[in-house]
Image (cartoon, rainbow over all chains, first blue to last red; front, side, top):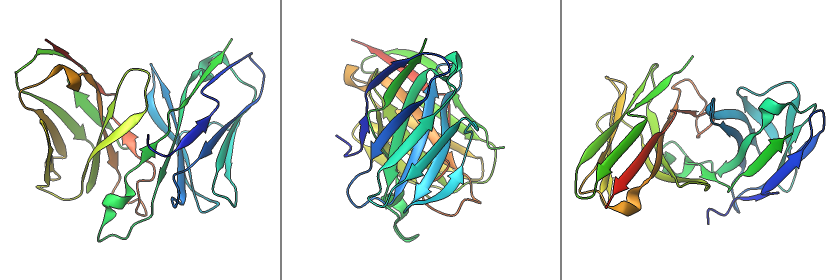
Length: 118
Length: 115
């Protein structure tokens, strides 16, 4: 168990709908990352938050948004869903270490949310 | 744009054999990560390699990093069935602000070890 909690584990919805995925990071981790895993695109970085602020943005569509709350949990909102959004969405967290011991900065992944858009 | 290429993408091998998975990347980086993913499961961190010449070993797995060649290897020694999984390398660009932000993953190597 990585200590990163994602809910729900499975989500089935229809095209055009909106869903929210939730992530609770490991205790003490300030950074939260969202990744999308699909067969054709592989693992793609979507977005990172650090202590409530957006820190890095990857291949995140405009229909998707995320936020990190004061208690450090994060939500990924996916709207106007399309068939191609079906994927496994992972949340990961890391502890900001100093450069002298950056092994603290490795990512711990949650078990993912499997999204199926029908 | 940072590109990360793994090869092979699929590997079937017998128990007891040795093999190496290769990870090439396209831009300067001094941080490389290896992850393992079991079917239907999450990703488990295996190694973090931080500098040129870094070598780390755990059990039958050994990872190394050559930043000049932009190459990392994951070597499997005397493979056992329990090592069957998909292995990913991931690279952090050198220009990032620190921390494992914005990792670019390879497509993964699907490893099957036959008894």
